[in-house]
Image (cartoon, rainbow, N blue to C red; front, side, top):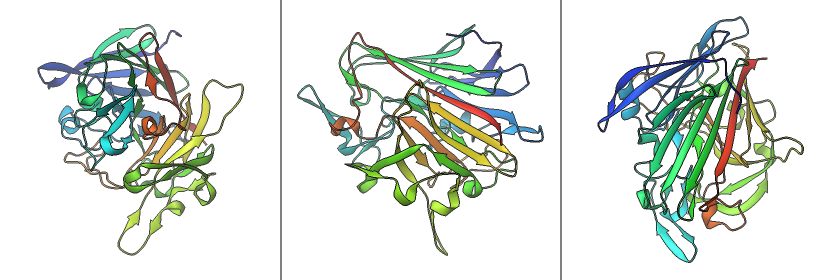
Length: 346
């Protein structure tokens, strides 16, 4: 691990379930900073400059802990034990069927009713960055095995936020983690329609009912993003806008450890976000169901299309599709995947 020149400070932010919750600030030598909390190992804010040097926040979030305690949209949170959906809220492993919590119709989504987004993590601050640590007991949410997850955040001088997930278990289980940040690169909080997106993927999963994959992999075709305005991929009529919730299979990029997954830009601010990852796929979700009981950082409650999620992870419902990349974690093995968000200008 590389040592960081980032300054890390923290303050008390409240309590949840009798455990202290803290707000952490990681500031680099240029004055750009991120804020995080150990509630859900959550990304609270990312404050970076635009093309004119004006600093503002580019992720959705809340100025108080209560906003997160009442949030149902996973804003900025770490997702586990299994990111995205598992069909029928069950999977088979080693001839046993494991029944999960069906918190999304007949399916389970983002780990169930009490996913990692609702948990208070332990923390450690070292020369290598900020670490959040969680113990998930055998049977929690229906998942087998005592699982330990460490989420390592680094904030670098190049305005790169690196997230690495490490997990281990004492029983064969499944694991798939991501961050559920909603990005909005504008200075005024406008809807994301005029952001442009590139996704480095030539194929994608075919969605079935309830966003559960059918198991088929198909070319991206008309859903290809290549410096494409997000608005152009939505279905819009006089009364309703249908957004996106698709899984793109990232292209192999030989000779690279972190694949370039996507680039998001917003022309008025001149900001650009590049996303690199070791994960095999990227979920593009345009925030169709965004709602909040509390005001966000800009003083307004969130509503659909206020931010876009670009979630690096394994495929949805992988445990039920033998042709998908395996998500089984065995005793003695370490799950390790990482994501880098690089913020810059056009």
